[in-house]
Length: 178
Image 1 (cartoon, one colour):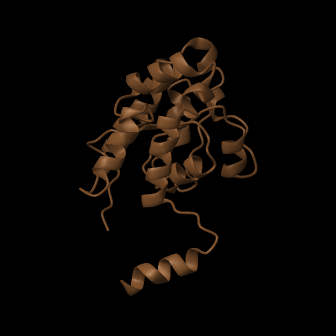
Image 2 (cartoon, rainbow, N blue to C red):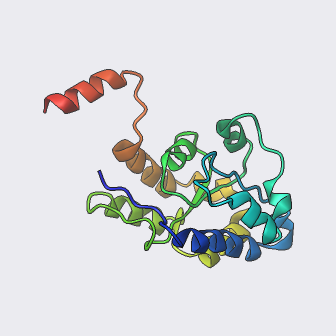
Image 3 (cartoon, helix red, strand yellow):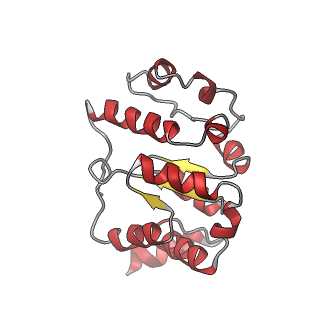
């Protein structure tokens, strides 16, 4: 298993990247931005650091569950390569990923799938690129999201990393037998 994430003082850069994303949004979109902090901040006081950067309003009320918040989003912007990505894609919510390559290393098997995400506008490697995309597409994200090309890339990605068959136990057993 390959694991990659911002480590040690990279966490400070990671926070700065989220702030940069926010600062590059149009003012009316920045007012609608909501951050959802992971429950385990591992001592980094992410909430406090975002408040210090002037983003208190973006840390406002959240739904009872992450899924509730996702379902209420026009666009889900995710800056962590985790199950969160799969949940958003499985729910078919227009999703923008902000993943800096220096923090989120990919296996050789995963690289082409993520490259496809980049080609259709889902994956962005900088805060500026992601914010620019959101600024240009927020008024009608479904126009982009429901395009055949975008949906095909999402379908292929989920087929590789986030399968949702009702008979999932058989699928897993078949893979283990091979």
